[in-house]
Image (cartoon, rainbow, N blue to C red; front, side):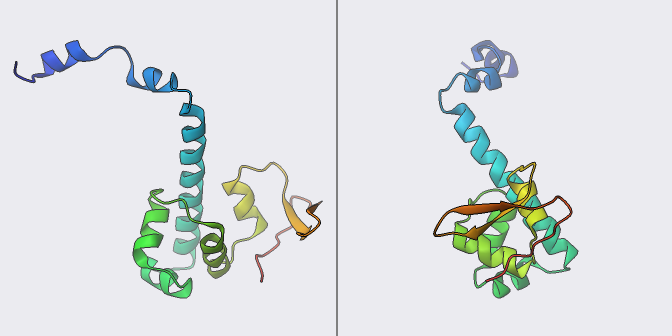
Length: 130
C-alpha cells in the first residue's frame, strides 16, 4: 500500500502529544528539556551581549565551538564544571542563574561544606567568582 497522506492519517491514533504525555517518564523528560532550553537561551543571550562568537567563547572557556553550539541548541546538558567555566567567561550573575532555574528568590552558598544558604534581596547582583 502506498504511503499517501490519506493512508498515513488513517494510521494515526489520536493526538501524538496526548499519547506521549501518557508515558510515566514524560514529566521528567519535559523538565530536563525545559532546563536545557533555559540554559541555551541564557548562554546565547549573554554571548551575544558580549559580542563573542561561539569560537571565541569556546576558547576562553577551554572547550570547543561544537560544545558551545550544542549547548545553545539545547542538544547538550553541560556538566557543572563546564557550566561554571562558561558562566565565568560570560560574567553570569545570580540573576542569570535564577532565570535558568526559575527561582523566585536569589540565593548563593555561603559555606558549601555545611550546606548553608543565604538569601539575597532581588536587587542583588552577585557575580560568579572562583
